[in-house]
Image (cartoon, rainbow, N blue to C red; front, side):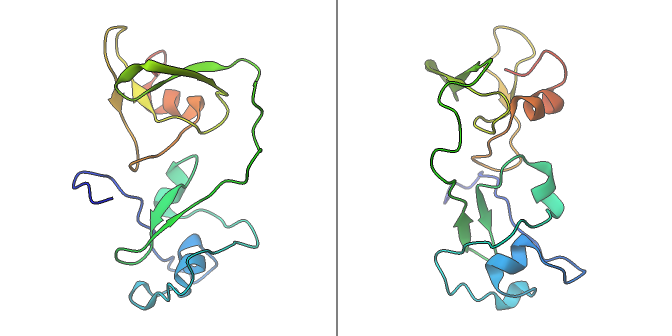
Length: 146
């Protein structure tokens, strides 16, 4: 996370004072008075997204306040090992690492390849973001997601 050019997803408080991911993780609606008392926080209910959260398929790591990060840990065994209609997924700039994935699951970064010989331009909202194939195609345009 010390990488200077890494895009981070920084949560902001809502103006309406309603429940938000920011207030649940901060313990306050004021970014200057975040409590950060707990290393682990379990949310009791779903929360409506606000701001940048609404632009991504999966919120993995977020910054809450200045320099405090929380990572979402997915429950184990929630995805099928062998999905219907899998798609090939490659590791960023290491094309020899191949695997198959469910296109409906947010497991890969969004990359656009305008032609078959391009290595791809990654268009992540934040560093480490994972998207579904549909989100990647929406960001890249028809037939250019890779």
